[in-house]
Length: 160
Image (cartoon, rainbow, N blue to C red; front, side, top):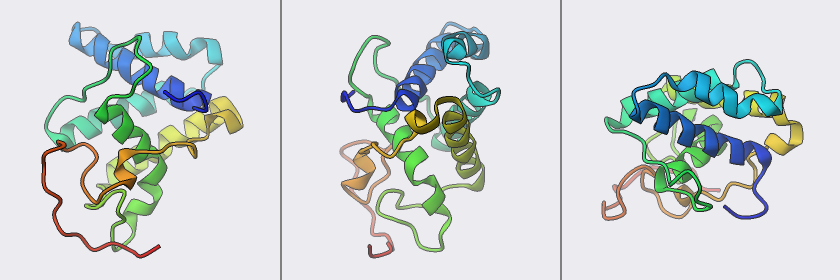
């Protein structure tokens, strides 16, 4: 991850990695996520909001989210897409989609994204801001969770 990454962004990615590892080992991820966030004095709903978002995205995609290795500084495609989701979710409810989220978002995922963003802000203040996110979703009008080889479908987008 770039050095300019916010604390909130770093913790969000670590929470995804912890959530994924706990689920893979058959454990309840929430206590592990809470233990990871505890030193930051998290907003009470941070870990639950993150777990809900991860569950909803997996259900919508019909596949497991794929995080990067726990000690890696790089982001997996799914981690990058989730960060983009947090940044662009408020715009995804408009009648026409944006290039960042070409197919729009279900309401539950938009609300979960909002809850995570609010909890990050309540926990980290200005250091929870995700404005420094440069997601792959801004590059092309394709789903950021899709494969790199998938062809982009034509979409209606708002001109910026």
